[in-house]
Image 1: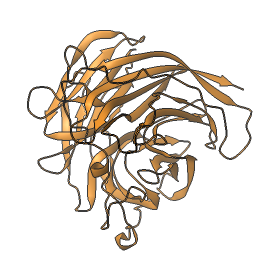
Image 2 (image 1 turned 180 degrees about the horizontal axis):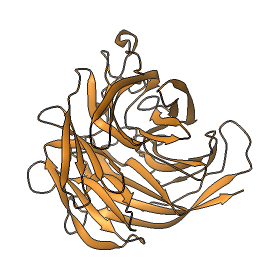
Image 3 (image 1 turned 60 degrees about the vertical axis):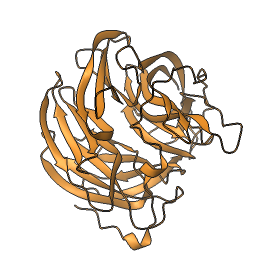
Image 4 (image 1 turned 90 degrees about the vertical axis):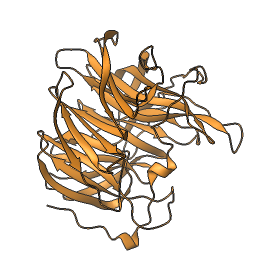
Length: 380
């Protein structure tokens, strides 16, 4: 069933694209401006009930995906995927000397050693992207800066385009920082609903969701407006429940919104305070993993990985980056982590994210894409 139409007169929301510095930036500065990141394990706590289970994370490896000799300008939106035959690949957004925005990939072994296979699979007048992988096909979505549509594209394993559809947006719809999830044998693409009103980082809104089959056949469009939330989100499907992981606002809290298979609302729950951009969620062996941004050090912000039980009690978390708050109230520049993502495989968590130095009066400096690997230690 379709969700009800949102009452725009009752909601004030924001264009998050205007608040978050654009990812389509380019700079040739050296890459020595970031302090070394340290990994810390937080105290194990629970959100609602007492549990005897705790989870800790032991850092195994951190790799810099880009910049490298080929992609010298670095990039954003680091996303890691597991191959059926073993090994991994990472996709990213980057700006090379050619016009437009480039979207590239790099292949890795099981130990995250580079195989030497990398390249550009798409060049377009686009900004921001979301991706999903079925094991046989890679699905990609980005906002087309010329048409204003979102392009949804299906690629085979050799990066040949199989099919593309254009998703036309409504006047109150924002296509940046979109979500693309492959759940319950369908693709779900989301955008942000921007009602009339003054942009306010402390207000949320609603999201449109487009449902497609795996051959990009359109199924339906709906709006989720049961509680205030934003884009920069993720989704998983476990035991006949859709879990949509979002934030109450740009400077709000991390929440889950639950729906049954007919998209009936089952309620929401705050799972982490003072967080945003939970763009990575994974489920394995009765545990949910969420990668998000902690904004308690804002305007700096850090990538964090948290783990929860099936009732969404917090079992443990770890900082991926450890940037400190600026020394001055109005800094001209400061470091930020961005757009975290997570997959879980064989007792390891693979967190992909980007980081940069934000400059208030100019483009960001030193955009880097990373993957950090942790051993997951479950203490029962």
